[in-house]
View 1 (cartoon, rainbow over the protein chains, first blue to last red):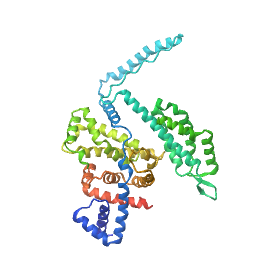
View 2: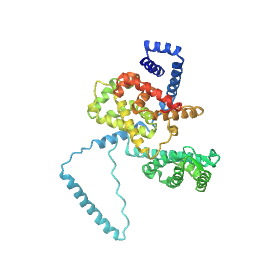
View 3: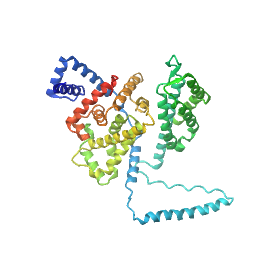
View 4: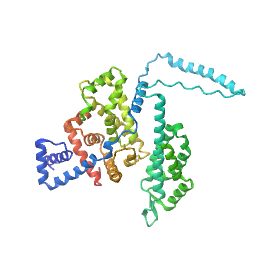
Length: 260
Length: 191
């Protein structure tokens, strides 16, 4: 292939990408019209570009309001701006002071526990510095709603995976009677990875979903260990578990509850 | 580049940020967060990761506002931060993916905003999006950035060069190679 060919191929790509202008564009267009191979190349690349230009991601919107994002950024900025330089004696004095304070707090508490007295109510944590845009309450509400939305989405996706496995009837290999479960194992692994974030990140907001999340996790773990071609009896086992634990119905109900 | 997102307004806001005025964050984010989110999402194809990247980008912008070159537009500067953070995030995810495989892109279609394609077209869009995602993942990091900025952000070659700190020739070569690789990938050849 000569340098001329390489240059032409590059120009054909750039024409398909819609970035050629003026004389270069006219010349390349004329060349493409005369050269069937270049035209085929141009049309194929143009189709790829057209697919990207209609990709729904181009119009995607963040699923959180701007105020929420601003509050998060401000919080991060606030933490990053906390002065870090301290005299070295603090390195010794801080742990020592903490130890003294801990002893001072713990000793009366231990003594109090030995007495039959009613439990003292927990002191309320003082609210953090309020954001000028969003109060702590509003932020907490948004966080809670988001956590519940994430949990609902997680459960819904998990339900899809379980249905895909339980309902598969696609033969992988008729000879050895294996069934195709497609990408269900890898999707299960990805979901399991997200589970920690859903449960820990969600905290109290998703506490009511813990039971369903735990049962879903057990079944997802089984699916995650499967190959993409599975023995019929393994699929049957998953199907039985889904039925016995009434997972699909519970997922549906819990998803509705989480979505409010 | 979108015309409403550059100009004096951004410069003023950046100057205020550089002076430590946190109030300038909101209008600056209001102007750019959707665009930056779409860059990160097109690159990473994971809505949660994309949101984290946008958050990090604005934190970084605030903390390094004093080093911002006042003669430059803020839009490309923010885009550059976002692309670099997306690449960092991508590398971290790839290391993690040695153990786990992320969900396909279509699995996140539900998070797209209302007003997306009609239900009967959604499957088609979703399938196309998945196939695209697969070949995009196969591209080298910088080539993918060039494709994202050109075909998801409609930037000109000059704007891409400015955003990524590349020469115009390198941008052209990258775009050409990326498209050819994508074609090979979509036709079942080695990306």
